[in-house]
Image (cartoon, rainbow, N blue to C red; front, side):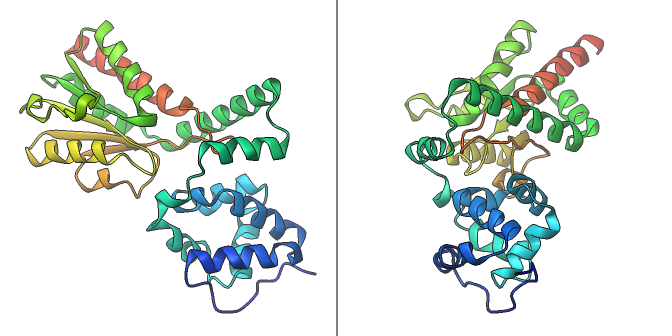
Length: 276
């Protein structure tokens, strides 16, 4: 059987797509079956990943992944992706499912886990250095350096990123306010004219982080952001937004690229303040 795309009507919703994947995966050619198996187990990645990223993760060429999408009846990857973008939060696997996937892959040994996370971190760092521009970093560093106070907002998985920044800024004597949302107190009134907000949120995006950052922007405060997807609502109001994507192991993501990027940013802020 060859890899020529199947011509037909594409699935109209995610449920139909899943049914099609389950019924046709075994009959697909080897490389397309690789795409089907990976896609079925990592549905949460479709909404926030490019076709090249999905192809790399499936260990095939982008052209093969495109043929896989066409074999399901889609005109291309974008048409399939549209089914998931409105429902990005629904397909993130829970922790039990992630551990179960590791069991199935035989990847629960500590040596294997360490190697897998090290490789994922390496891939994330390489992608970050190839996509983040120094111009964007320079603008954000200068804005933070000239701010009265830098407000750091990052909840859930982003907390480790902003906490590291807060520690560095404390050591650098940069006036900083780390917003934790404790007791549902978001400290909106603490953000004043002349301040800068740096908001960090990753898909499926923290509504608390988005809300507080948006409120600051409405007040005329400069907002910068860090996220992993162009679909993040922070693009609607932020002055500059950085993007880092963390490679994952069975749904688990270590924030290697995000911490490396924000550490560089914090050091750049200190250097800019010293030179001004």
